[in-house]
Image 1 (tube, rainbow, N blue to C red):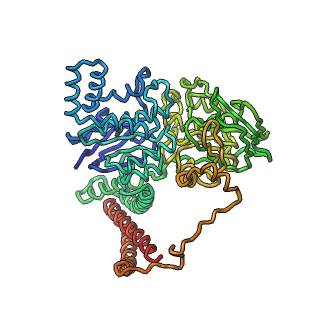
Image 2: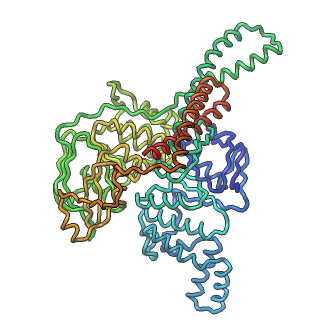
Image 3: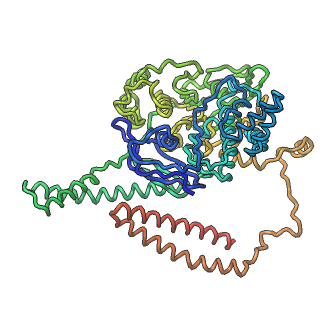
Length: 639
């Protein structure tokens, strides 16, 4: 079933064209992720599909039998409502029936009650209240009487998510669910629950996210928005990256060919007399087409970070027996840790466990209740806070909304020392972060959320720190910027401490974790390994009884007895007739597929036509996927 058809959509704001003549389809069961730089038109495209924006040209046809539902980054709510009242404020008929039924119960009016029961029967709403409670419970919302104004940002997001999923279940129509950065402000446990829910449920989904593990687990189609175009990739994030690389390589090859032809045709044009024959006019038209291709600029402006880091002494940062409480809530107690040169530490744990508090204590922005902290004389902290650029590191309000971006950076320093020994101006440094000369004179208060985050990142690095502390750095940054930031951090020679729910980001940039476990107080455990390995260990581990924990000592190993009837490594299972036949077939087919892929690759290198390039790239990808599947099955059968 087709949900949405969009043909030749274009949208511009002033002189800036976001996208031009893009065409796409959304069918039932599609799970699509949109990947693009900030400012490429992702949010605008979502608003067009929601009917909140009108395209400059083109047409969007939405199937009359479907409803488009949006889960936005910004949650609208009335602070005086409690959670139950907020959940009941929905317009779908089953929810209205349930609300009327509750009202009839409260009034005790028999006529109202009879009418409400009939409405509940008509809308099949009897199980809805139970389903709503189950979803709230799964999202760890247990007290429905709490006021919305008393909830944290993460709790508000979870309640809004519960409301959305309940509303979708209540609908008797097909739904297209649009989600804009759904994982922001959710802890990892909630992200994994949502990931599992969306991947298993029969939902049609259009998603914008920077969480690559979430994207890979949930979506099987990627829309790439770049250079005013829309590229569609069937497959995971890795497939999109490979296709993008092939496309850019082919484009560069075509530009090289066009440049060679352009030089020859330019010489011919200069020799041409003013009077033009029909034959020469055709060649002239062809010249201008070649010129367009030859003058394409494929050197993308990118975020390249390289600076001369301040020297670090032998003493970095030492923490001894620090404790911190707020009232009756004990965050952590008697925590001791020594940071070494080049440490790359991830801090993980539930929301509210005390992770951000620990970050502020490390920098001396907040004092522990007890214990001591010794900081090396050469240490200079750089703090990338999740509070954003409108707040100071200590959490107080920063009055920078009416300051121009360029003046904000110049207040730190007029020039910046790069790693190659040369210095660049503040304006040049801003250009490295994709802020052109016109934008640099924009007031900070007028920047988008993503631009403010990028400016805060720029400011943090411009201060030339040697001990970086990042609190949820990937929120509101686009995937291309996150990728470059990861590459920079992997080469950073100073110390790095990161709090993030982005599992992919943490896996790439950290070497070990400080994990907040338990509560009141939390035990901070040192875990050597990746974030993914830590999450897997938590899933596999089972709590021990008091007796078991006393019995098993630190240095003891647990021996598992091998039963006589258990197969040993030497007991190799014999292939069945069917499996042997499958193995023989795979061994015959693999060289054939490899040969076909090689032929297509050679044809691709010679291709000039864009449509032919796309077709050949798609076929190469198809054969590559088949080969991977054959290789995996071959290994299974051989083992």
